[in-house]
Amino acid sequence: MHNRRIKIGVMGSASGPQIEDPVARQKATVLGREIGKRNHILISGACPGLPHDALLGAKEFNGLTIGISPAFSEYEHINEYLSPAGHDIIIFTGMGFMERDIINIRSSDAVIIIGGGIGTLNELTIAYEEGRAIGIVTNSGGISNSIPHVVEELCRRKIPPNMVFDDDPIKLLDKLEVVIREYPLPIHEDGRVKDRKEGRG
Image (cartoon, rainbow, N blue to C red):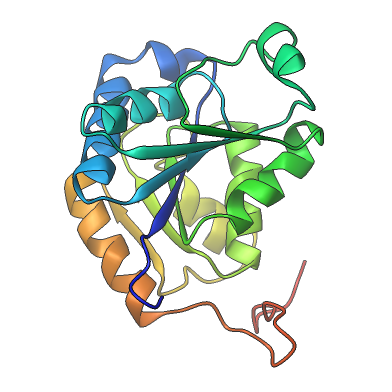
């Protein structure tokens, strides 16, 4: 990591019942505050909901925040995706939600899942396949308590050693910082990220 600042991608529910859950919203805010306190960079999909609550928490401690927008312009970002303001930097990908997720994850040293529905599940599977460190805020609604079931029982894959779980966002960040150091991304000599040994499917 060469002592550079860690980039934490916060991915989770942008809409749906999870964003009405005061427990999930409080966890998201605490998570953002802790990212800001630790001088990490918060990356999100420039969306509303729980990732935005985390952004607001980070800004309480002057955290640097970057939004990876699905839109191709500020106008589209605001008027068509109804995305909130507040990021220090917004990158307009023009790629829509699905392709934007790839940029979001590849821009992050680690990914944290909070709450989450089908879109977050897409982000989780991309992060898993690409070997990113992943933290799961459990008991935050959505898919947060179902990930071991999805990975191990439905997909017949393994929970990797760089995937950590905790319902306390502060303890989760402690764990995540450890696995970021212990399990750096496997890189080919030509710079590409190696696929997981388990194979695809």
